[in-house]
Length: 430
Image (spheres, rainbow, N blue to C red):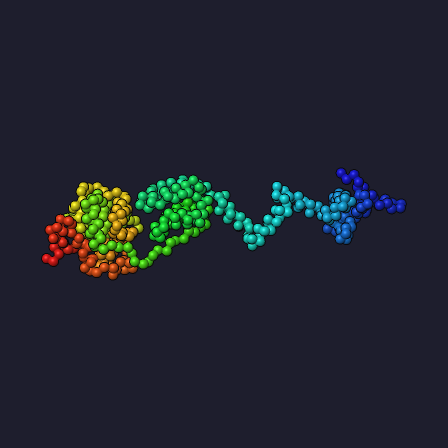
């Protein structure tokens, strides 16, 4: 194995001396000594000794053959000029080989440099950081496209009895249009924020959309489609600042002109306009309203499809004047309108040069009702809102006379006959 290495036993006159053994390689020699060692099994130990520029070095062995073999290696290394390698013990070499096996195809020094950097970045907690990275990057959860997860999510909500048509179906299809083929876990909060701001410029609408996607992301996390025990990217998006200032309302004159406009040119939308303005139903409630729930004898409207999670299941009184507007509608059976009626009414009105703020019919109903009755609690029940919201937004916008006038708007027939009914159904001034 080492052709230039020889082992020479040191002779002694008259008697053969076995130890120390001198091992040479070229001009280099090392020695192996046998010494007494009380704790060794044989009572002996074997010390390899060699000299380097740093001084005399020694290494102890229990087995003489191991000592001699190591001596041969040391002599060969020093003879070849590999002094640093010669200073390594067999244990050092075993560790080096094991380290190279662990590093695999990565050079050992590169692996050590990366390890040191990882420890510095994570303050020594690099294994915890690695586990978090693995969870975040799809190692520990099922990868699924946004389109697929939306389908699964809406199916689960329907099975749980949630009305997705009035909530998630208004938001999630546009999310699928934007991100459908991408995996849900690949979408970050910046992308979601940009989509929310572009798709929903109005703060209230944006916050509603954000609420829906946060629910979707949290459900996906619970289903192991996203990392467990981590805040989702949807939750990192920010809520929009909603304006606490004046709400958008219209006056009695504007509402009167709108009623006459739709009576003449767009009679199919008259019922939706009347129930929105005279009864204050929400947009979604108007679109779900059935004519069978409008009692023109008892003068009240039973809200057919109240908004979930609100005090919205209610009876709303209608004035006799308002009832006359309902009587002008054609076929009063089945659904009152299509699910885009309020949007269509607002667009037609704006095209006709009317200023119609968002949700102005409901806002105007509540404002005029509070002014006419002076009763916030009663108006709260009729509108399906909380008294706090009504106190905060709707009081002191109109006078009592203005409030009463809103609910006494005459039809064209009554107007031509000079009849204007008050809120109790009596001719005004009688």
